[in-house]
Image (cartoon, rainbow, N blue to C red; front, side):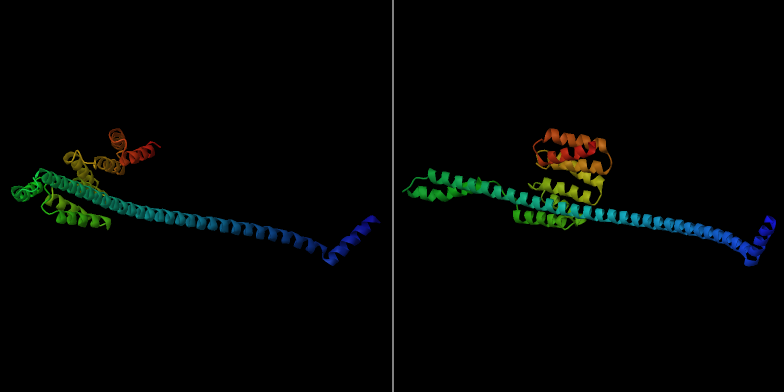
Length: 272
């Protein structure tokens, strides 16, 4: 009896399509799995492509930052050179003012002494006054042959340096030294020749110029700056041992100067 019922049920299912439905369900699961796998693969590919694009963008951003930083460094170097030129001009003007004051006081003192040596009321004394005045003029310090031309030549060279025309600045300062070898500005001109070569990245001539300054003008107040320039050249050439020795010499020999303060700062950066 039971077998008859089971047989009837199976026949009914067969007539209603139960078996094909079960097979269709199995087919739908396989298709879904395939679609999920394809979707995962597509997501993975998209992720890799996105990461590659982000990496390229990051590299581009880093490259742009380096370029901007280099541009800013160049601008700062130009500004520093300009400020140094202005300081040099101010120092020169101060030296000229002090020289004029000394000449004025020497002339005034000589004239007073001449007047005090005369005898008021006597004609011979009155006639002797011009002679004393001539003596006073002769005792004044001997001025350069043409101080106006000397100052003009130096200013012209300095202006070329300020404009960043370092090649012509070297030529102008060299011409100045040839024309006015005994000038009080000779050491300064020699120093700026070296700095101009440094800005042109001609480190060999830059160092030679500063070494010439040290040899030819041992009493100049430019010596600490010349040594500092040599230290900078040695750093640029990665000769760090020599640079340390040069900076330490500046600190030892010229402890109270601005060059010594800069040498300490650079020495600290080398030790890091």
